[in-house]
Amino acid sequence: MKLADVKKENGWLYSEWALTYAVGWEQILRAAALMYRYTSEPQVLTGDACNESQADVKAPEEISSLAEAGYLTLRGSSEVLGVPMMITFYNQLDFVRVWVACATEEFFEADYKKFNLSMCQFLDSAELAMHRGTSA
Image (cartoon, rainbow, N blue to C red):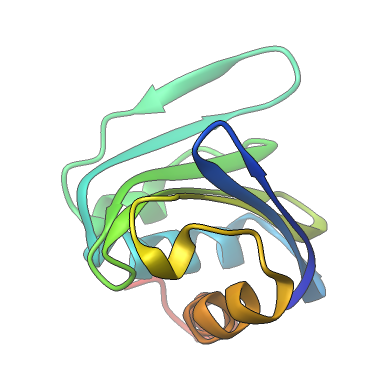
């Protein structure tokens, strides 16, 4: 993924990332299942322009059965990054939105270069998961 923008808002770093290709629902589910495994107290939300609902997901394997929607949001505390985060994938689009808490020195300022170095490998792993053959 390529970092398009990052800014600080109310104690969070808000960023937008460009995917290499637009992705569909199956690819989103693969990335979400991988990230779910490394998230403490994860919550999964799905929805579209008219509604949003929290999915009753108890294990990463259950993500693959979620009904198709306009977006999927995963939120919780990232065990990889060591901070609370929220990521939203959009169905059939080529961008992702990420919020990371300004809870550590690494994520305290919206410095493009530093933030990109911190997040790029993490998000590239999610993008690679999108293009694997299975969701788990």
